[in-house]
Image 1 (cartoon, rainbow, N blue to C red):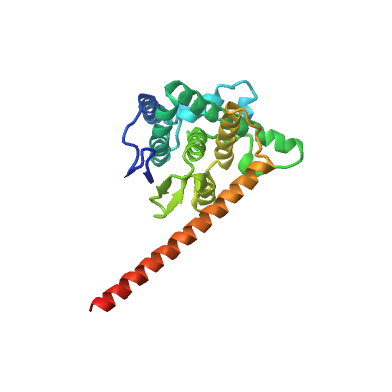
Image 2 (image 1 turned 45 degrees about the horizontal axis):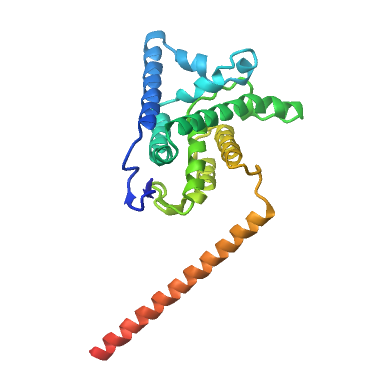
Length: 260
């Protein structure tokens, strides 16, 4: 993704990578390398077996899984996408927030997603709902929950920034990034993607951001009306600009014909 940066320019990714983001990238890469080594030495992925979130094992006492799972990944493509997204959107956020606040936010989003992954199968089962994709024995791993939390924070911090996606190659405002990525993953994503984990990261991020600003978890009617009014004003402004551009173009064409 290319973005209109937080400093106003257009570039591929951030111009500065804060130390805290570098450290998270290195930590994830180191754990992934350890996973590969364990596969080679032991014939199976020991770290994933011990650290991925498996609801049944979580409630059997392995509660650390809600933290460790976010540093594990299922393949090179999996970690590459997560780390690229963390680098691109986490860097400006860490610069704006500071290392301590960003790290706390990132980890809490990841843990929040892990807790939802572990508890949702049992909550649904308690009301008589059972889904094969939410079986208590299915392991989940990856930093996506924490990364989705970072995406939400970025989109709420700089909602008007324009992001040029690499796939599909279209521009999109940051405020629409989360619903667009959810829809894209649902339509084109692999069958084993954890939508619950993604939603858990976004939910945890939303709670943290709203609580930090002393706001209620749900927007009130007045704020929704204000946003609708702003949207209508932007539409009218764009229409006026298009009309002015068309008028100037016709005026230039008229002057050119008159000169010739």
